[in-house]
Image 1: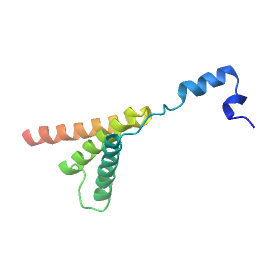
Image 2: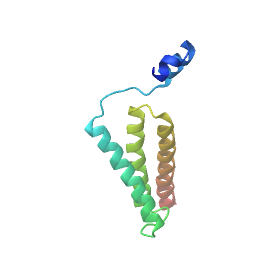
Image 3: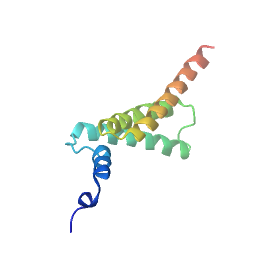
Image 4: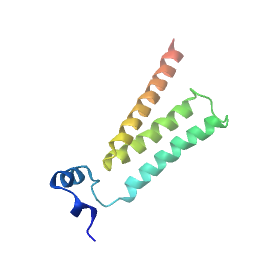
Length: 107
């Protein structure tokens, strides 16, 4: 019994090869950055859901900003561009929240 790639035509083999994830060694630092990012983002959600933080609180915004940055970095390094895109939007929302805090405090 052959592998799936042996049963594909030449065009399908090209598509599979073109869009397959690159295999590379995972570094400890890259994994750590991603896990810290995920932990921070989930902690922010957990704390706001249980009432430990309120929306717009600078700590909540910073947890989301730093967490999304870590996840975006790791996702980008591994070619997961959908996750990278979502986390860049998450970062932009956090930056806008911080800017709103600064402008609101000054005005």
